[in-house]
Amino acid sequence: MELMNKDALKLRIDLMSSSISSYKQDPKLVSAINILYSREEVVGSTSILPERKLLFTEVQQLLKKSFDVKGKTDNTLAIQAKQSRNCIIKKVEEILGNINNSAESDGSPKLIIRNQRLWSNCIYDLDRVTLKTLHEAKTTKLCYSSVEDKSRFNIIVFVLTKVHELLLKNLTVTRRELFYQNMSRFGNQSRLDVGVRDVCCLLDTPPWDLGIVATAKGLIAGPLNIYLSDGTVVDCMMSGGTLIPQDIKGINEFKSTAKYILVVEKDAIFQKLLDEGALTRLGPVIILTGKGYPDVCTRQILCRLVKELRLKALALVDADPHGYEIFLTYKYGSLAQSHLSDSLACSSLLLLGVRHHDVMTLAPKETQLCLTQLDKRKLTSLIKRPYLNTPVGARIKSDLEVMLAHGVKAEIESVAATAAALCDSYVPSKLIQGDHLG
Image (cartoon, rainbow, N blue to C red):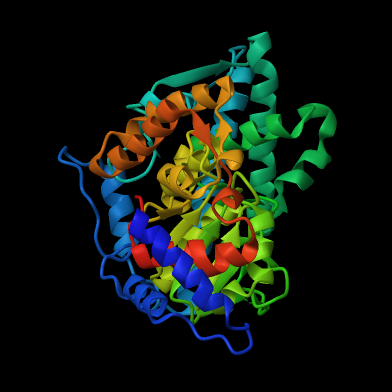
């Protein structure tokens, strides 16, 4: 660790002597980036298989990853998309038909939904949080006759009806737009979000395949062009970054000269890195941020970039319980979105920093903060997450346990007081050191 600090100090002095316009990267940094870029273990090329017998749905997921669609024509893809829509439409009609039949026969309509509030309802040994199948998972029965269930039941029926309409017309709508279509029924956005999640579970289909997309909040920057299905080309070399498209499914292709991806927790750090010329100093690199806890679009585009551009991704987050949870959400997925983990969890993501031992070694005492009781409860909860009971997860768990034992946390800024120090010293030294977590 001391060696890393000496190297970091020397690196900062060397780099600060050059302006961005005449900037030449340190040979050690160039070598580290090239090694990162040339690593053989690429997402989709290898899979860590559990020792137990795989479920049929898990086999399907693994086969889907190895399936190459590059050789298919646009016409073939269009036919497949139409067939997929027709299949979902049929499922929706069957569910709504069963509800109507139950109501007409003086019965009480019921819906059986997998419970997405239980970690025990998930499988963890495929490098992500994956929701169990209906016949294996603990379920929740919603009865229309129940006063408590009636509101949730009505929202599900409304969403199913809208999905049917969207698929028939081949349209899309954001969750926010859907909320404003019937505000009195939903009351608040979160109730609609639960209804969309319930429908996705019922149909075993992601929301973007149902015509429901999230409102994007994340930003992306770097030598990257995004080609959309409507013919639009999004250039990500824009000042201040580019808003991530909200229809990730509508992206046809990525083209980039980047050699790796840097996922930044906070917008403030993202902007500071861009202001300091990180795309040159740390590049060629794609930098993206979800502005805190990542939205679906940010997680989805990260997964696609890693898979389709065959790039490694590194995360830069605060050395506190929330920072580590954000990293874990990107890497393993979340409990609430466990039914979408195949498209949202970037299992190859590595933690560049800020790690707890960086704080104890590099951060001045005045920037080191004491953990609150809420922080300690959050850490204890993270440590208990089942997906950390693996060889890879054990190292992450160890970091969390040490943080809890020391009772200290810190922000990214603590190890690099200025953006220049972050760009010229801390990040390059971490890249050169190569000891990434995950």
